[in-house]
Image (tube, rainbow, N blue to C red; front, side):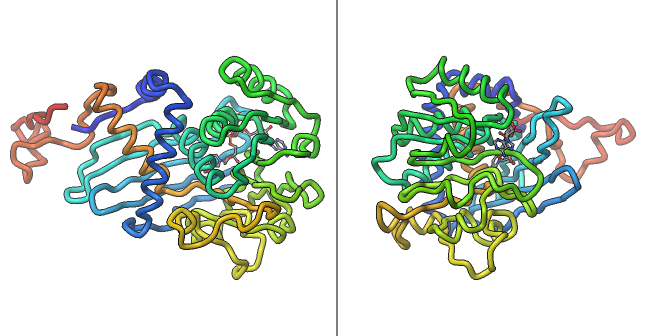
Length: 349
Ligand SMILES: NC(=O)c1ccc[n+]([C@@H]2O[C@H](COP(=O)([O-])OP(=O)(O)OC[C@H]3O[C@@H](n4cnc5c(N)ncnc54)[C@H](O)[C@@H]3O)[C@@H](O)[C@H]2O)c1
């Protein structure tokens, strides 16, 4: 049987663990998996574009487990009452192809993205960074703030969104659950001024220039998350040209990341090499670093593995017959009334 984690089950796992603790657990697991990068069979995700957004399939595997995520990105969705990003995913045994876990990944995507952002910033930002500017205060934003507080000790978060109601919501949530100082800004430039780390996590279907070169200060780390598909970017290209740029999986980021705006030979460095000590991260305190995040399948593999383990430990989720369990594995027809034989659902939790 396949373990099914719906939204309610995932919320239970997160609530029982606590959001900050969940983020720290995920970041540790992500780091472990990035350190064994070479063991994974990797490919750029398969994207299906329309004029309003994108639907993507994100596969990855190691020797033991195969994972994929279905995810969309539709910036106009909030106007029709739907989230911009929605996702679910599967974990399967490589040896048999058996799907062992089917899970919600919408909430999980926000958690794993924030954990990845903070894990990257830990390797790339100045160690004395204490303030974060958060541009784009939608679904992902609370998780980003909490991850940077839990993993980097960020004490002040400076927030801005073109939609003041999104900022109202973020400020309300953060004020209720963190000791961080929250500074509400009237513009991106005001939020960014003096910040050690800047996260851009906006949703806009086009080439936006959320950050322009005049806003960038020496020593900043920029965590650019919202530009994640062809034709959808957040940074002025000169911000990238003035920085040392890090990516998840270069073949995918060349197509989808901020660096799609630059020449194909613009130098970038994959984060896993920094974590392994093969490539330097930040080279000097005043250097500007950019993590050009688009979201890579390995991050969802890690999240699915964490969910699987937590769900098993705590008995969360339920078993569903996603694929048939047959007495005779060659007798699929026996499932049907016409086959006059009944398949027995036999595998237990
Ligand atoms: N890299 C990754 O791994 C990853 C993962 C998840 C989501 N994302 C991307 O992150 C973005 C945010 O996702 P979300 O779920 O929070 O979306 P959301 O729609 O809930 O929130 C986006 C917010 O950005 C604001 N915004 C748009 N343009 C802006 C601008 N110029 N300045 C300030 N604010 C602006 C909107 O008003 C909105 O409140 C999306 O583009 C999504 O595709 C990336």
